[in-house]
Image (cartoon, rainbow, N blue to C red):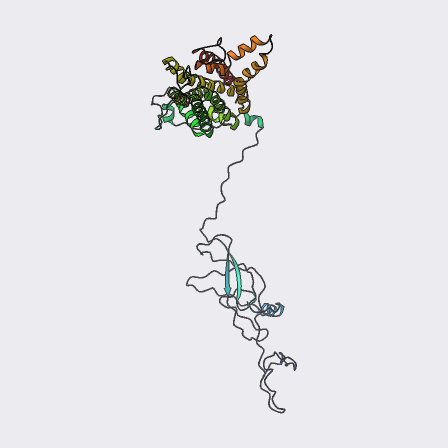
Length: 458
C-alpha cells in the first residue's frame, strides 16, 4: 500500500521511453498490484569546501552526528537534479599525519555513490562512513582536493635574495676602483723580483731572424704561378732566339768575331719577362692585402724587403746564368772565329746573369715605391725601351744629337751588348762598366724603397 502523502506516478500514454511501455495493460476489473515507490535519484552535491574528518586510533573514521530532519529535507528539496557522472571540484582537508605532501598539492579522488534508500519524509538521514556532511554525491563523482602540509613538515623556504644596495650616484660608482682578483702566491713568486724561477714554456721559443724571413719569401715565390710563367718565358726566349741566331750565322766560310758577341739578342727580350717578376714579388701582396699579414708576422719591414731582394736576386741570377751558358756553348761550337777568352766567357755568362738580376731588383724597388703592379711594370718598360726610342728621333737634330748619343750609350740594350763586346756606340761603357752603372742606379732606387716602406703605412 502506498502512503497517502506520496502520490502514485501515473504513466503517460505517449511516453515510449518509460519503463514498462512495452508491457500490455492488465484487463479491466483485475486487481491492481501494489504501487512501488519511485527510486530516489542521487542528487549531485554542489561545489563546497569541507574538511576531511580526522581518523581516530584504530583506523575507524569518527562517527558523525546525524543531520536534523529539516537539513536533510532541505538538501533533498533544494538541490537541483543532476545527471550521473557529473565532475565536481571540492577542496578536502588532509589528515594531520599525511606524509610526503607539500602545501597546495591537489589530489584527484573518486568518491563512491551512496546507496539509494527510501526513507520516509521527515525521517533523519544517517550519514555514511565515508561521506562528509552535506548533500550526497552522484555515482562516479571526482573530487579535487587541496592538501595541507602535515604537522612537523617544514614549509618551503623562498630563495634568499641579496640585499638591495641603495642607489649611488654615477660619479661615486665611477670613482670606485675595479675589482682586483687575487693573484696566486706562486705567480707572485715567479714574477719580477720573486724568488721562484720564471715560467718556462714547453714549446721552444726562438727569436726570429733573417733566415726565417728568407724561408717565408722562398715559399711565396716558388708557390705562385707568376714565377713559373715569367722565368719560363725568359728561358724560352733566351735559348730559343740564341740558337736561331747561331744557326743563321753558322757557315764554313763565315768568320764571326767575337764568337759570343751575338748571344745577347735573346737575352734582351728575356729581360722583358724578368721585369714583371720583380714587380709582382711585392706589388701582388699590396694588391691582395697579404702585405698586412707579412708585416704582422715580421714587424721589421726592412728585413722583409731584404729577404725579398735576396730570394729574387738568387733565383733570377741562377736561371739567367744557366740559360746564358747554354747559348754561349752553342755559339762557341757552331760559329767560326777565334776562341773566346776567359773574360769573355765570364762576362757572357756570369756578368749577364748579374745584370739581369740587378734589373729585377730595380723592378722590385719600383714596385715598392709605386705599390701598383701595372704602374710599376709600365715604368720599368719605359726605362728599358724609351731611351733608345727617344734617341732615334733626336739623332736627326744637331742640337739634340749629343743628348741622344748619351741616351744610347747608357741605355740598357747598349750596356747589355757591351758585356758581350758588341756595343752600339764605341764611346760608351765597356767591359764590366755597364754592370757597375746599373748597380748604382739599383742601389739608389732600393734605398728610396727602404725609406718609403718605413715611413708609409700599408
